[in-house]
Length: 512
Image 1 (cartoon, rainbow, N blue to C red):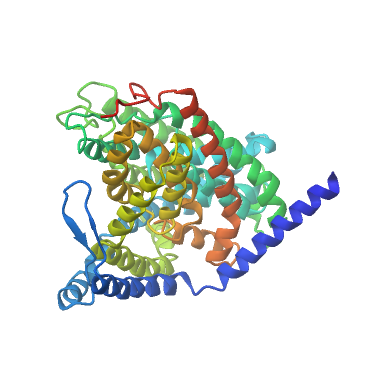
Image 2 (image 1 turned 90 degrees about the vertical axis):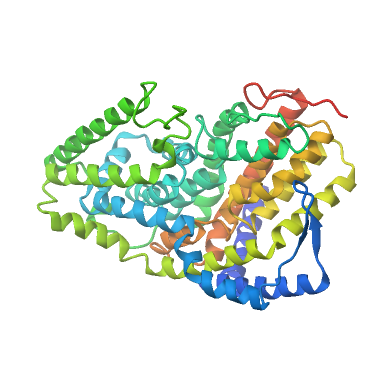
């Protein structure tokens, strides 16, 4: 039995090594995005030449592939090159958040907190805590990518484990478990709104709640945590091995000094103050942090402006800690913390420039919409029963996610096609959007098109300078496969039992 397990493990290891070598043989990610942007330009020209088109399921209009190498297309490219970059959503999010985090890091707050976590948590619980924290961070949108993923690497290093294992576990929770959560987050109302608009193509009064998938996603939180922990400890960590890089004194798990404890106490006071202010702004019916007019918490500045809160909390806790610990003595120390983080982002900025051009070109060309419509027609013609049909839809979504990372942009294209189609087959929109969220999540961690993929490469290169796209993909493929299989099984069981996916979500619709 042991020999069989060892043989199986060696085969998996050989496969992942091949994936890593093949991926690292690809050009630099920046070159790859630049090449793909050019490829879209030529593909749009060819698509327009051969007359690629599709009928938009929502408007009924004929959608044709737009030739971006035409005079009009070239003019659009030239006049939008700068705004494509400056309006690329992850760019501002990452930079603003990192300014705040830089203060917290340089002051020593993050390092002290990390060591406190390691010293106070049983070692055997470190992996599930990191994966679970990653899943829960999705409630606050991007915070997991910009804060938890790099912090997990430091935590694992301080605990005497390979930092890449910590980065992988956190990334798996944040991105692979993107749709799971115990609480509603910013993505829930966004996808619900797109689903509702698509559903009204068939039923003009249909309403989709932001909690349409809540029951399923609540349970999925524990599934993803369990699967992520299993893959980390049984596959990823044995393959990565022990950390052999250099360590500094700050990497060692050592008792906190009196100054550090005083700094953490000051930071706790500052954090409590911010927490009380947030509660005063959210709990009252007309709280100042609720959405004006509706009083909504889901659409409140607390969630929609979460990056601003990351900045405020990072600076506030970092300065409070620094004053208490004596590591911040003047405003120059604060500015130094902000500048130090920004100085490491040069490569990321260059990569984002080409990534933003590629995404913009792909959207302008209509290639995504045309391919999505024809893919739906193929799925419709297959005439599959419910379980194979939805499993096929999950696989299709997972595949499309490899080429189009944004969950909302992708669903904006797919919902008007699949939601009405499944409604006419008797499946509620809530079922369709839940299946979509499963497929959309599981391949995030291996998709170069995922907005934060470049940032993850940068985090990994801190520990493995020669790491490339293949390193990340090889590291994360086991998670992706485990999440796809496990989450699909849960979805099938849920569907077979006829359980509602969320409060008030129907389990079937009348046909005709």
